[in-house]
Length: 221
Image (tube, rainbow, N blue to C red; front, side, top):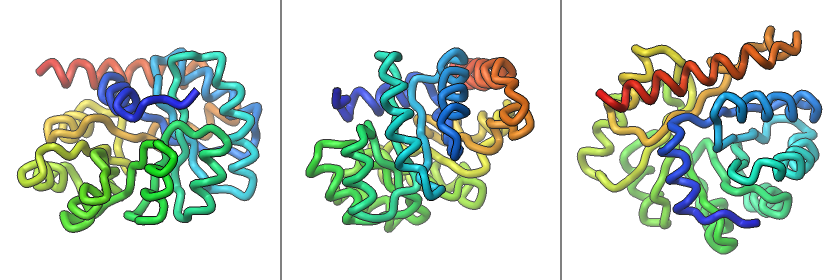
């Protein structure tokens, strides 16, 4: 069932962190999804980065239906054609690394949340003019928390989610959340290839619980 755009952004804000993940093996993806859910994740972004990503996402979305409160979206989307295919596969939201008008337009024609990647004030403003209320600050490690502060000073109603280089440490997360982000996206800094390859999914759940606990503590202060 299609999820309301406002509900998705509220869930992003409430949890504070979105795992960003890709793998070519569907069984591994299922185990990672289960582990992140046990850790407290309720919004998950799979990424379109391999030749079989659509096939894997389609199966993963079907599998994820056992979690009625889990929101599953797709990232690394560049074209209208990709957007249409993933919407047909069930994607709850679409994330792009860049500001791509045809992706945003296609999403809103289908009443799907679009989150474009932006790296300048001009891009953030243009995204807002296209109807986007949430943008992805990417690449986060190059832009930094100061970029978010600058955006929020002139476009205070825009919600920002940085992805790229965000680390699950108190120092790094504090900088991001004190800059005004609604949540952070984490990929390679969160998912240990060694743990995944060895099947240590309990460790992944523990790491996620710790990251979410840190975010909660930071928000209280």
